[in-house]
Length: 332
Ligand SMILES: C[S@@+](CC[C@H](N)C(=O)[O-])C[C@H]1O[C@@H](n2cnc3c(N)ncnc32)[C@H](O)[C@@H]1O
Ligand SMILES: [Zn+2]
Image 1 (spheres, rainbow, N blue to C red):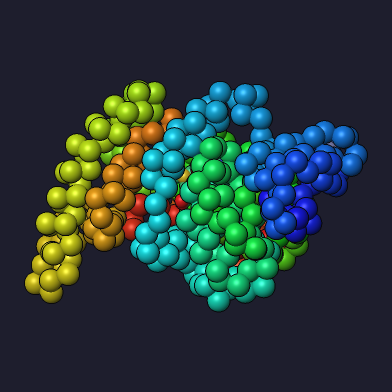
Image 2: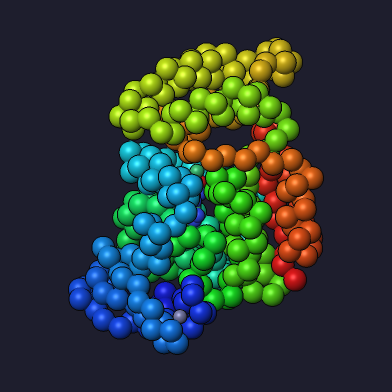
């Protein structure tokens, strides 16, 4: 934990200031072990392996606990980085571009392995605070260790231990996995200062009826099965998807004579999009769909209401790959 993080922290119970109450291991730049304490209610929070821990995983509700356990495991299995993540991230937060970030204080809700955290830190932000409930924070911490303007904390998006000081908050692929996505969104944007901005990307209801019908029942089983078995079983759909995307979708979409036919293929925009990814990342995409116990699919109408609920202005809603929604707007 870098000391500059203290500027952004507030007690999740009472909103009080957070101070460093003890330092057990410090290498000069980062505190690896110690304790934080609320100046008002005296509640304490440990710093373990360099990460401030605000969430007590034993006491969060069972559904959140299961989701966190699943993602904690999957990000530790797929801790690698890939250069293609950069464009993928920009496609999720469009119309935001790298230049947008310069000098901003940024909050990331549900950072997973920190693949976006490290990129945003490199785009000139003053600071980025990345939050995740699961053990994925260990991977995100390793990915951003030594980057002075990147901070990782373990916390629940519903109880953020943060002050309302952020210029921009974003959340990619997280809110639809929460027990109440709309409340998660509200909690995230409540930390954006007046006039600041936010982005969110969520699964769409439109065009995904087949997932709700066929994948959801499978997910109910696979999210609870042995992780080793899931890792192996997921290779079957991955092999089908990998062959189809590499041998059919990519070549047809890229050939001038095949493009018209490609447009008629099942789920073409999405499958063509992910044809750029290698085996390991397609395996990760499949695992990502099968490991989470909770997934909501949101209609455009519902997603637009989220932004109306928080009185956002200048809202831009985009339809991504014909299967998901991305939103960007300004908070009042
Ligand atoms: C599909 S992953 C996306 C991670 C990252 N945004 C990315 O795109 O690489 C969803 C993440 O949300 C996190 N998450 C789930 N519930 C959460 C909660 N209540 N509070 C904070 N993070 C949560 C999970 O641990 C997981 O890392
Ligand atoms: Zn307090």
